[in-house]
Image 1 (cartoon, rainbow, N blue to C red):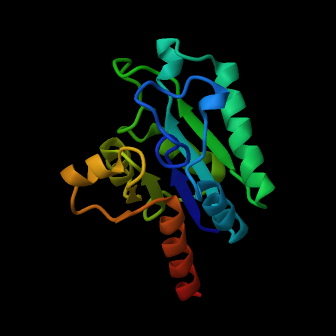
Image 2: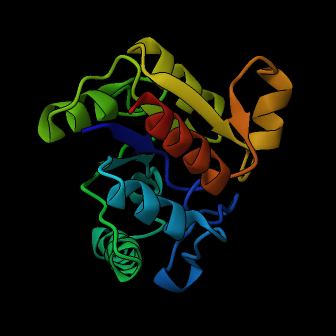
Length: 180
């Protein structure tokens, strides 16, 4: 079974420079929920790997983050799909942890717990740190132009990139179909 790893803010949901602090602020990017569901229904294991330093900064609490993730799960399930795991780095940028992207701790944890190999596994993000984390474990870094994606592309013009998660999912599903 193929696997895919996704960043959250700017890839699945609308991002904010002020952080997504309340459940009401968590809004999916058009087409992202349907894209996750399509991948899941096609047999992909879906893992979300997300830095959430707002926890360490006190911008929101664990209960609020859990509510956001329940909303994500519920929306994907309503479209017939499944998010198999959500992996969160709760640390701040100066905490020097192994899980905060661009380090690959979250990706390694997701692969170990969900039973997939990292090399070649797509990791879709909107920031340079997402691309770096994927590259460090030989995963397939894919950039989307939502969130910080346009800015990231300007400094990483060679990156494989798509307009949004929906377009990236279509490409991956077409590749899966062609490989059969």
